[in-house]
Length: 380
Image (cartoon, rainbow, N blue to C red; front, side, top):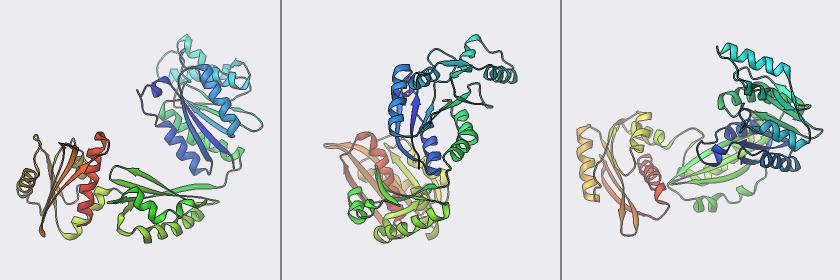
């Protein structure tokens, strides 16, 4: 089975001006093809450094996918860098120039002289027509390698990945296998406690089991490699049942299921509705609950920082104003030792008040408070 690396190109990525979503999309598609992805690299708009990154990737894997740097300007260096990495010259392709001109005509625009740069590709490359943009892509092949250079515009990259690259990889490498992943979400438990329960499973080779900790939530990832999706599903299902048996109610959902969905579903099944007040969370808890809507009567962002007793009073008053059975108050506030999380919960069964110190990164405190409060609702 071939292995792959992704190289995303653009100084704007290194400067943090844009978020690299292309690598995520390419990685998911390579995974679904059963191709092992070992590295993702970001390189600025520098020919020498891009060429060096490509050469280093060629020493480690068979498939190198680059994205970005195929535009018409001087700081679009991917074509030159690939040519330098493999030791060939760039050549002008009249057929690509014709495609570029036709694309501009379709957009009711005229290409400028610098657009002609986009018709140059490394000698011996296989051109890949781009029907949704003006930057042609290309594949440079050696006996062992395939260097696939795609545009950086996400819409163009995704179209070419689906319609050109995936069919090419399937054919060249006779790909029949699949890598499939399933994510189990947990709340109310830390990473170390989960590792203590399923650490032996994390040593498996197929499926593999891994943990990803977030503020107030830990994900368990099960990844299986198989000849077909049904076989992968069988491998995953067997290990998933073992994990569910061990972790029990810590698991609240899988894949795209969210904690707010599960929390509100629990209230719906009890015939209860929810009203929320929050402070220090930037309105995020209210936005997430409003996106689900089921059993949610509304929320209010407090303009002042309440103490625990005030939070309880505000929560109860707002709950009554919204005619909800359950009131939830959440506050992130400063204290002598840093930050603390205040929670107020009112249900038909009584009232609960919690104050918890928070010693992690301050920017993660709202997320931790959000997950902690939703976990309380889920476990009512």
